[in-house]
Image (cartoon, rainbow, N blue to C red; front, side, top):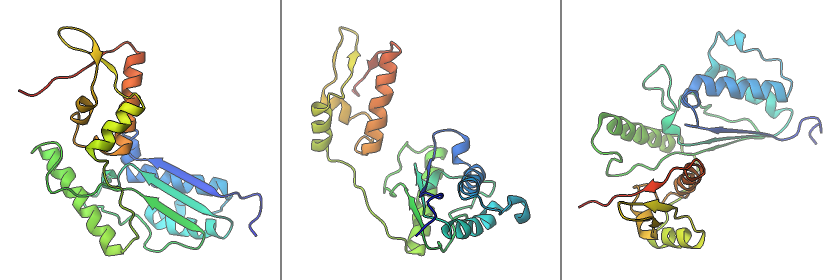
Length: 216
């Protein structure tokens, strides 16, 4: 049995919650320092000459000998960036020691780019594809979470009263569920729908009104 002093270590990192959260150096540094502190490890980062990706496997190995480690990286692996433009997933250890579990999220490649034909959309689409190429090459087990259907979205919006009061040129009224469905291509993503709702709650709390427009 594990020493009761070292409880299960859960590390949650939300990719994209801030600018530095997408930088692999900051992510690795935060993870390594958290593991070192929790398990009282004596593995200084300095001995790896600043190569955090080299230090991580050693730190995980030491931590696994003292307790269980669960690492969750949420927000899309394709959004992790570094100094090397072709960083990919090379910073993730190819082998995990016992007692270590790694849960990752990534955007599923689409046949049509999201965000139009801008340079940013093209680069993002390319990163998504490269990320999945790496995932398939490593043969990681994958759990696919498909987007909700339009019927499910309408049901959620209506049953949980997600539609905010909005304004148009004539009068205030309640958004219909159909208005909600047409807001964004990713509206079927449960996480996106939840975050959008929370954002609207904050905007409403601050006194802003949600407005919508229809294409003609």
